[in-house]
Amino acid sequence: MKKTIDYSQKELIQRLVRYKNILQKFKSMGLSRVFSDNLGDAAGISAALVRKDFSLSKLTVGNKRGGYPIDALLQCLDSILGIHVLQRIVIVGCGKIGTALMNYKGFPNENIQVAVGFDNNPARINPAAVPVPILPVSQLAAFVREEKIQVAVLAVPENAAAGILDQLAAAGVQGVLNFSPVQLKTGSALFVHNINIAFEIENLFYYVRFNQRAATPPGSGIKN
Image (cartoon, rainbow, N blue to C red; front, side):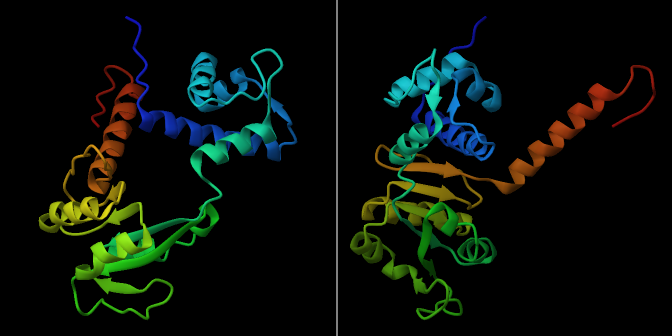
């Protein structure tokens, strides 16, 4: 049975980001035009899906027969994804994960700036901290509203996650990257992307074991 393609906004955006990265690699190789077949092969999807994504995203540069100019495609994708606009975020929870994210050196390359961190632990609060000041959670809602923050990272304990999410939603945040050890639900005006590190590592072990079993000759007596 043919699988139905799920055209959710999340999956479409993920593919557009993948196309952008592939196009940048093609450009670094000296290419000036690309075909949907090339993008599809590099992304591991069909050329038809590439063209459908372009149509849904109203990418009108180029065509199926003559190919697409890479520079024009990159400009269109940057416009859609907002790459050239400074993306300011806040991090709630400044423990080990939150601190690591605040000090991540790759954010500037993607035009992302951690505006401030928030925490309830008085020992961590430091408004003069460099590179990212840390404020008490009691100031979270006011800061988000005043600075018009749209995206937040959540790295708080399980028992605090839902309450903080409610505060973020009420203050106008529209997207949350959740590192707390609990699944949080997406609302009508708030998108939540849950990241469970232990679950992801566990899945990797499943894949490794599955491949090991598939590579083991029948009757070899080897147990994985």
